[in-house]
Image (tube, rainbow, N blue to C red; front, side, top):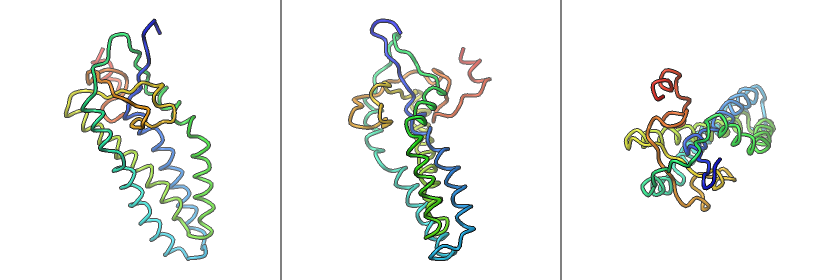
Length: 195
């Protein structure tokens, strides 16, 4: 990068990156856990897990939404000197930063099945579903405002795109970068048309 240049990462991609790594291990842990009788029995474990799934999903979806909207409303236009980080790089960086936490969460979900079958796995899956839903919500905002939200990469070292270290977002046109609104991978046809 040249002098005065800095890198931007997509806000929705940062939010969405760990969702799959919470969802699929959570589903796996819940499936395996349902095979274990546990201390509470399968029925109670699955019912408790379903409640935890809903609660976790709603909490993750709702938390800090006001902060996201404030940062989005006050976002400035990205300058020409910025470097737009590829979606794959953002996802890889985010998952690498969380890999040990994700592994520990999976092991804890599996271990909890001996007490409450399937509950830990469903909780994990609920967290993933909440993050995915939040990324879709950000995508709706981006479509409605015809702009993509970006954040400086050095401001999200802990992976919090709406944390205290983030003092503002920047925006680009809707076709910038290689990810569509909401952080999903842009189709090849759309990417070619954007060029």
